[in-house]
Length: 269
Image 1 (spheres, rainbow, N blue to C red):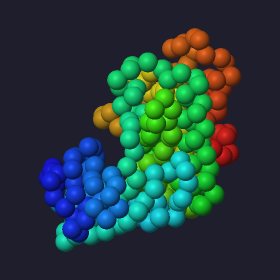
Image 2: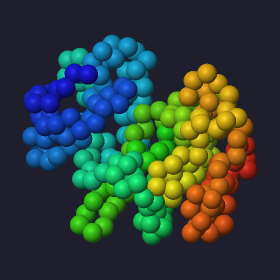
Image 3: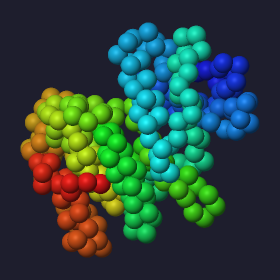
């Protein structure tokens, strides 16, 4: 991984600090010298920038974000290139993602905060779905909490594997993928609803995902194959067995969202 911290892109974006890395891109805290403001700059890894498949996927994320203007979706400002460096300039969020919060606390998120977070995520997703865009990678790491004193705003981010309507998709993170993502069938709003159910289960259990490839009945030679088998064949574990303080109604929400067949899930976020 090449660390570009300390460099300035296009004579404007000073990359202060590397704050996150993924398989395809790195994210920097940057200072925009024209706006006099902090920005998040997502840089496509240089070794992938000449690969048309990865470049197109990166450009696709920018194209999707450009179409989405919603208070609960991270805002895109520019998609630029500086020589071989392709990058996206986005809104900087002062806070943590939901994955970091779960990892540090190891405790379930309170129902009050959970309601606020998921209400905002559902609003963002419903808006995206109305614009025929499906996220396809809903998970705690892609839900940012913009901390403002004693309160916070929720922002959905990382549309890197998002799909337009009438696409079939296999991209995503196995622990959160709907059955149709493993089988290559058509995805739609209900694909994101399934991932919302998985994420809600994880948040309410303090960090446990329903399918981890660990069930004795799981089939497959790799963890991904075993997780896929569980999504396709196993019922989710009981939320109430893990944390009995929740109501049967809460468990029913998760079980409905995580139905194997899309037409049995909630029809919209």
